[in-house]
Length: 315
Image (cartoon, rainbow, N blue to C red; front, side, top):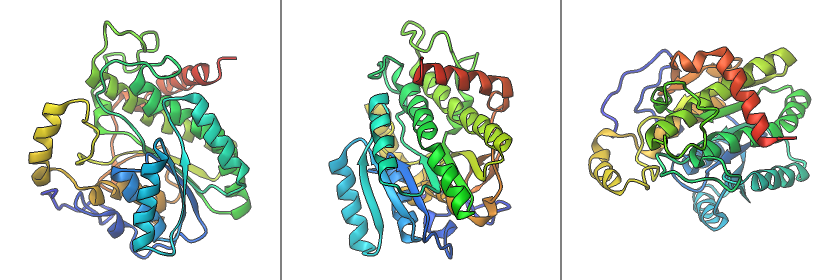
């Protein structure tokens, strides 16, 4: 249980749960995509959005695991509208396939929650030969967002309801390589540090939201994009570090958030009326927070955007 109970200007605190921050909110008629929805805060985010009436598309790497989560939610919430679709952010081919299949369903899209991620992984390359953490945490989500954005724009225009893009980052975005993003050394194994590489990918998440905001505002589109820190949470993110993971499992129940609290900021940013019209911001504990100076670097955000385009659309 998170020990600190201070409340911020929003009226919520680190101890607030996803159900608490969405109490009284009716999401009926909204459609959301949640990546990494088969476990942890992704599964809890799916449950709470469905509880509030949203139609949730679970974008998951393991469809069988996603199906089990869906069944568990339906047992508790028989009226829940949930679909499970396969998405492996480690593969651009998979991302394109998911987007194509989603678009073919002719569903609206009001909310996109880029939740999935891996943490502190040893050096590996994705299926597209990009360092795994950068590929999964940023590049896959960058491509997904790009591919479904037209659907979101159409939905916002036809429904006259604000679309929201929610990108999960981390306070780890403050702990990255000195240059922030190592554009010319993304795949440099010799200088690889798993923690800094994770921080690099999380910095990319904040920069992505900020540059996306700038572009959406230029277009005059009724869609917001924000990033957030969900908090230190007991999940399987540290599975690559067995010793640390064992310690966290023992100590975590006393000092870390549980998944109900960990999903709160995501659900707050995705649904709460307090966040209407707010874009390009960084949230923590269901309140506005301040990102690092690198995360606010406009030129770095533009450079990352162009770099990401070169990776996802090299032609």
